[in-house]
Amino acid sequence: MTPTTARPPALDWSIDTCTIARAMAVLGEKWTLVVLREVFNGVRRFADMQERTAIPRQVLTNRLASLVEHGVLRREPYQEPGARVRHEYRLTPKGFDLYPLLVAVKEWGDRYLADPEGPPLEMVHRECGAEVHAALQCGAGHAVTEFREVVPRPGPGAKRRH
Amino acid sequence: MTPTTARPPALDWSIDTCTIARAMAVLGEKWTLVVLREVFNGVRRFADMQERTAIPRQVLTNRLASLVEHGVLRREPYQEPGARVRHEYRLTPKGFDLYPLLVAVKEWGDRYLADPEGPPLEMVHRECGAEVHAALQCGAGHAVTEFREVVPRPGPGAKRRH
Image (cartoon, rainbow over all chains, first blue to last red; front, side, top):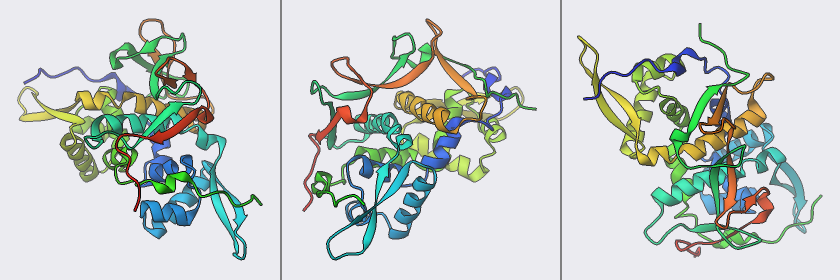
């Protein structure tokens, strides 16, 4: 039995402006990151996404609409010969900036949830062929390898709780 | 109108073993990363989490149970004087390994979703005081700053689609 711990300092601070919660309000619905994975992998069309992922039609429609609304994806018209104009989905700069997050999700999944033979996909540096990782680094260029090396502190948007 | 694009090579590959989808099956329910944020911030007790986040009681119960079941959190008994034994939630090594992912979520949120005055929390390197970031890096130590510098390739667990 551990002794009772001191009151965590985090409890003094409001979470109303928390950017993790806000990010997850955009990204945290079921299937959202899977849809983004498809687009990052060059699968940009509704029918292709649906065929490959088997996400229910209405859910896929909603997720794409939400990502467009939040400025993560944009719709681009295209036309196959003899068919009506359709749209494909492309990443905006805000969407491209999700790439480190997607790599971090993949790495954790690769480590703990892959089949015994290993992960299905590798991401390598075009220039040198070495695998790409999401690593923590500080602004002074030091590698941060342990959670314990990081200290949280209130930022400019911090608010005390009443 | 963009010309029609070639069939994306990703369509030839099965997503059955995708580790992003598997990771999001663990992490992608609403509130899950918010619960993990609390634990990383030292808020380990049910009552404290509920008071600070206002997550509905049953949802919080389910999220914590799921994270324990997936080996991300573990339950640790504690006892306040005169009260019954309760449990607090602590990160396992599998849970600590979510830290780069959480930092990546925070960074994206900070960039696009913070209030005008800035993000509520900063994470700094204990040793030097500089801010900590989730950066992409290859195994040869090169910084990867552009999505276009990364090439996907089938990994050992890749399966062709039938």
